[in-house]
Image (tube, rainbow, N blue to C red):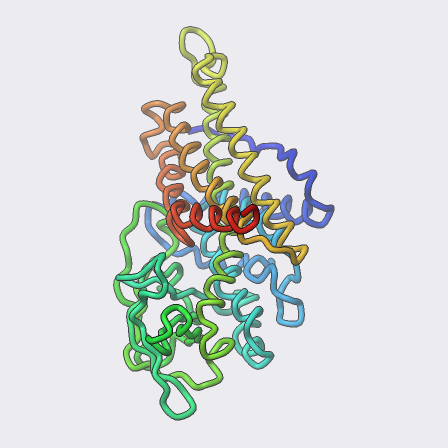
Length: 392
């Protein structure tokens, strides 16, 4: 089994001193605490509860949350750099971190009032509680307006009924941001967003998916059967749900880009380490032109993906529009991740197809980055529409 050295990231020059320090600290933590457990987590499908607890203590679960609400008060640049380091060692752990930061903490911080932040954001930011994001359904994914989950007024509150699908951390989350149709006649403009606590009667975890990869992260159905929530659980205005969902996904795509870059980097490092010790025709295969083509392309595309991610993060931190750049980063990083992991297996040959090396795990983990938080096809639609608007 190879023991790859970790890459020197020249693109860290784009980080300031605090961000570089955070990335280095995360690299040490991931190498020390996560790497030894990663293969076991994948094999047993266990939720890395102790690691998640430690990440909460280190401030990794509420990185962009204001200190007033127990967060680290950092920006998207620091967040994506730390997330990449976690993903290098374990993609499952990285997506747990990503969902809690981007899809649970963000919408509550961005659209919640002070009472809601006190109640839910504070424990989410420290990892005392874990969050999830309930948008997709068995019959609706990219087309959010096709959702069937309904929210009906009852007195000063609401009653929710429906089934949500493919919910990351759904089996462990205590707090869910749930989207439901309030007025079917309004289409996507008739969607509301609600914060729903796991302990509410009628809220239950349904089917747990058996997946190709990211096996340490649960992917669950969330079933809502006459779940009563008070009016103060409404996030934003009555019909703000679609805005909340899309705004949240824009930022979330930076996180998934970070996960994808981390997986790609892990595959590049593994392939390089192997090629330096594996010999063919009397010399290391790293000296063979065919292998050098793979390594060169893997390294170049991984670095390019990271730079796109950092561009989107920098725009977000500056308060500038970043939707197109986030979609570009997510698209390119995800497709690069899949390509780099595939090439990595090719470099390792037969060994890349075995569980003696981590490469097959990277390959399995890579595919989901092209699917969740907007498929590659959806990213292309977002990008094309933005370009047409900007240049048309």
